[in-house]
Every structure is written in C-alpha cells, then in structure tokens.
Image (cartoon, rainbow, N blue to C red; front, side, top):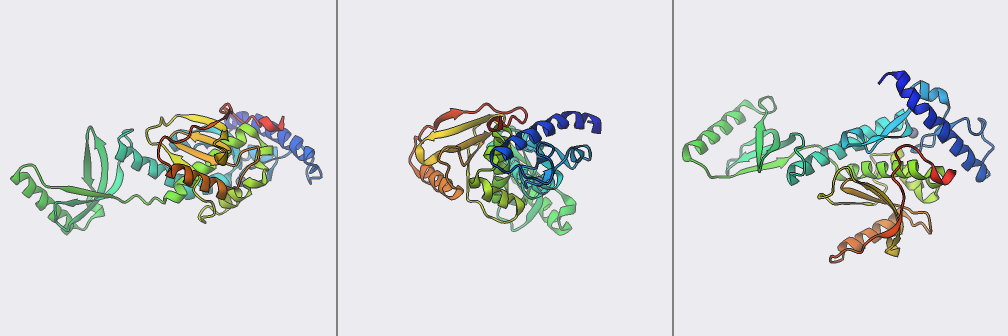
Length: 310
Ligand SMILES: [Zn+2]
C-alpha cells in the first residue's frame, strides 16, 4: 500500500475522529484547548493530540484490531509509539500463546513452536521445534541450537529405538518466550480499541478506564487484574460487543475477539477493573452451567463510528 493510499483511507478517519473529539470536549466544557477544537484528534491509548500533518507523516496511523498476526483488520488511528510498544511488549506474546494453543489443541495447523525434546529416559535434551501433522506431532531438532555431543547422543538414542522397534517415550517442553499476563493485556488493549471505535471519546473518557491507559503507558508493569476468559473451541473470527446487564455483578462491556472475551467497564453504573475481575473469578469458579450473559448488542465496527459522540 503506497503512502498516498494509506493517507486516503486514514484522513477521513482523522477528520471524523477530530470532529467527534471536538463535540465531546465542548459538551464536557473543555473547549478551551491550545489548538482550535475539531482540528486535532488524539491517540486513544496515550491521549496525545495530533493534527492532520501527523497522518501525512505516518506517525498517527491506522492500527489492526486485533493485531494483524492474530487476524485483525485496520480499525482505529493510534500513534506510532503506542502501536510499536504494544507490538513488541504485548502482541508478540499473544501471537506466541495462540501458536501454542494451535499446537496443543490442533484447532489450526499453526506454525512450528520452539521446544525441547527428551527421548525415553535419557537425560539428553535436544532443542528444536515442534508442529502438528495429522493426529501426531513432528519434532525437528535444530543442529546449530545444540551442542554437537547432544546431537550425537540423540541420534544414538533414536537408532536404538529404531533397532528395537516401536515403543518408548518422547517428551517435549515448549520453550517460546511467552508471558501469559502480557498476552492477556494484548487482548485487553484490542478490546479497548474496538470499544473506542464503536463508542468513541465519551466511552474512552470514563474515569474507570484510566487504569487501563496507565497500564498501556507501562506495558511491562502488571497493573490490571485478569479481565479475559478463553474458550479455545470458539472460532477465531468471532467478533461481538455486548453491554452486559445480567448477571448484575458482571455488568460491563464484553468484547469478544475470537476465543477471547474481555470484560471492560460498561456504561451504566460502571465498575472498577478490580470489581470486574473479582466477579469474573467468582462466576468462573461456579459449577456449570455458567450464567447466560444478557444485555444489549452493539454492532461490531468496521471503521471508527464514535456512536456516543454523535
Ligand atoms: Zn499513543
């Protein structure tokens, strides 16, 4: 995509975002801004203001929600700094976790995953990667990742196995550098950006969402409690947004991104992230069947809609 094509798509998003922000700031009595209201927009993650020149310069650009590697589409304008720091600190962990889920559940062919192998009861541990093939796994040693002596021992062990016929055991341990808390935060961030695209600045400015932006400003800290549920059987292209009314203790904005459902503060009588997380923990500890979520569906946005700012 050429720079001109990019700007052609992003500029109308900027103009509408700036107008929506202007209306909302005026309605909040915050129209006394250094730049004329309506002429600047902001990054929903860091709230830094940007003019139209930032779109042309490629520092305020359309971001994929969820990340492109996780099947997302361009949905909101964010600043380059926020997009980049989330990519390395959060989204990379989410991608690795999905690859591990693919491998372990067989829900998708997936990519090879880094692993260490043990053959029978030998203490030899061979480094390589592992992928699915039909009902089984294929383990591939990577010679340059191993001590040559280890490779020799592994080859001898495999030759013994071949001579003795089938049987014996292979063990593996996944060694992708993946932190679950960062992977989860990548989905929470994507849910927030989708909610912002659907609802706009009035939602983003809820004070209950401030801890989320503090967390995004410091992605390696652990400031937010667990807010997501995973259903590995769910389709990866599932997208839903629901203002949950029942169960009352889980009143929230539920954002469904494939197998992940993230619970964000809702609009009526919102609750803090801590209270939401506690409610989730209580409900998931209950014996099935889990209570059905009841509430108002919000259409999934294909582009920024800022519905509450209209
Ligand atoms: Zn930003």
